[in-house]
Amino acid sequence: MESFAGLDRAICNQMAEACLEARRTRSLPVISGYGVGAALLAADGQIFCAGNIECYGQTPSICAERVALFKALSEGVREFRALAVCGGPLPAEPETFCTPCGVCRQVLLQFCPADMPVLVVRGPEEYRTYTLGQLLPDFWTRSETN
Image 1 (cartoon, one colour):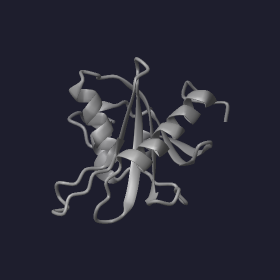
Image 2: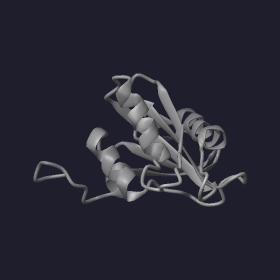
Image 3: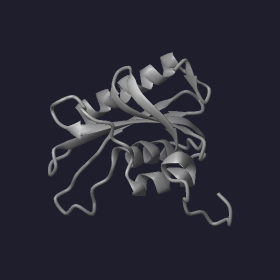
Image 4: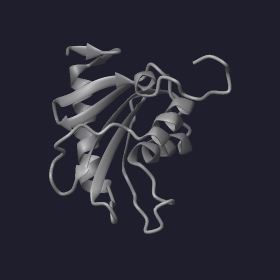
């Protein structure tokens, strides 16, 4: 893959590395041990990195993808180019491809374009690419069309 939706391989690799690092250093999976990392690329080139945060009362837990998105939104960033995500039991490196959960897909589609690339990462140069719309084709909106 030389490029995907306007992202060259160097940017994809940088995002893959960023989400893997976020998983190693920012993930707090105190219940499941399943660490997730996310790296959200803003239109202005900023990368917002995050890890999942689990709480003992499960419902206040939050996924890495939403932490990264909410960090960006809270800083006034409203335009996004791509997302990279990885996950798996810590401390081992990811063995499988971990896609965003349904809640994250819906939230991301509220703030990001349906054609935004999502890199599902297993290693620094090993990832699958999708668009948000491919991951959740019948997402809910206030309009009648998606």
